[in-house]
Image (tube, rainbow, N blue to C red; front, side, top):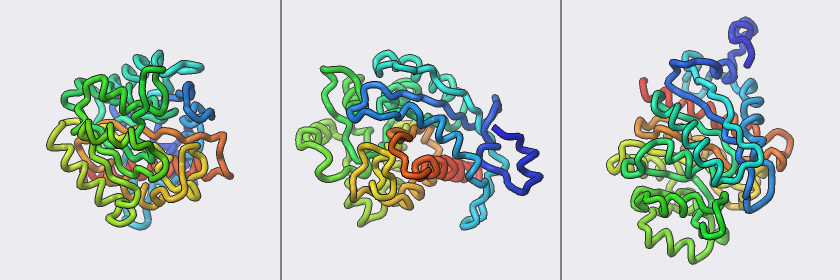
Length: 303
């Protein structure tokens, strides 16, 4: 990261200047560059590096609301070493890295990596009996686990681990991108399903706010999985699983800020961003904007 004093002298304090070695910070970021066993081969393992590289292009000032993030600090816990590591072997390293930060921070941010980072991330919050999960995702991620763990079955794996499906909410699910069997599994497990059409007609931010309040009455800690393929593919092509007709990037940012503000949200992840599919630098800039929207939401927790 750059010297924050140098940035301020130039009149440009960036999000990158907030992130560094800050042991007492209320937020932490952990890189989880997991790329193995993706259903669509790609390079999601490159995402944590690309997000960090884009942060210098994000100002700390939001002219729309007057919010200024300059006073926030985020501890960078570095990346979990996951080179050529399958999801099963990555479970303990990711879980332990998240647990180490979540035990002492108000919010832990996990930069994936493919969606297989979500299961160990959730376990990093502790006993599943007191954890709820909200996903923004075009897919159920309920594929069978009998052939092994991958980025298509973290929610199925969590159900098998004992997470009560009634404490799972999935927002942004897309038509013609999922199977009837997966939908039936979700219903049987008691998972709350909110479709991409509902997001368009009711507003993603409104749905997310309602579901967070409901989940917070069922669990003290909430984990949120931001699978970035929930965004319309035309606005975010750097996600192999994204489809036309997903939620708008504006709705994604609005929902992110609401999630960051909720005190029960203790950890989040960003998954399925694949820099190998970049068009220009749209993917990295979108992910970096997600990061500052999350911080802006978090800042609201203390007014």
